Image 1 (tube, one colour):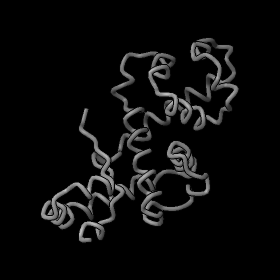
Image 2 (cartoon, helix red, strand yellow):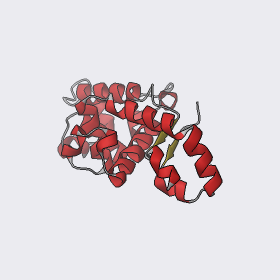
Image 3 (cartoon, one colour):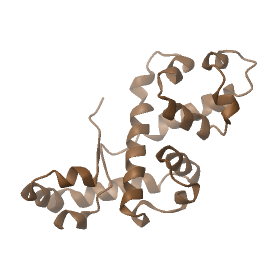
Image 4 (cartoon, helix red, strand yellow):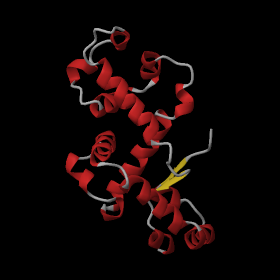
Length: 169
């Protein structure tokens, strides 16, 4: 398990000016580009899922990360960080599908159901129903779970919503 962080403008404001300048000079550009590349390489379906989790309008999914306003970008980065922690493969080790889903927070579970294309009706059903082969929403939910478990394999260790030029302000 690697350490993973999400770096936002709030973190930047708490840093001493010299440290901020040092990070801005040597690390900010590469971290920003890695974060942009990671989000921008998602298909629109995955971006819609991230925007849903961030509480953003579906239309925001068409924008690339560098095209977003700072506040929106920050919400996307925080959502990516929450989802990559929730759907990390190490959390899945030797746990049944229903047990893993039960461990998710309500918001993470709602995002999983959204990604599966399911409605509030299915969301409000008991999770143990997916253990039955006759459950009609079992397959889409398990498929969505597998997709989200693999979606964050290549996530950079540090996601940032702070553009490099902001470090010098």
